[in-house]
Length: 74
Image (cartoon, rainbow, N blue to C red):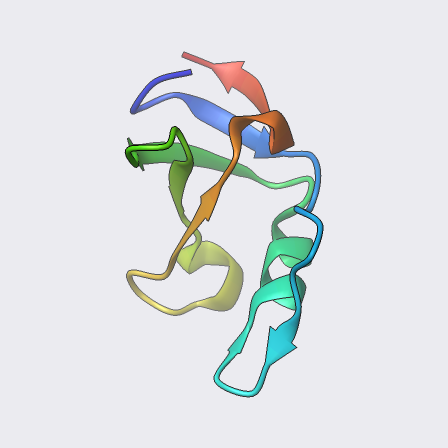
């Protein structure tokens, strides 16, 4: 996987909770089964995905471990 790869979210990280200002677990759950393009990686290897299409909120992203992603195309 690399920046620009198309991936499918296949799982939700353990320990996520919903908070009043950011419903983390619900947001990740909505992403499961959907495809996204990797827009970046952080220093510890987590992939950044633009999830604007999920919540219809421009510029919204999540950071997720690659083990919760399935490669669709490079």
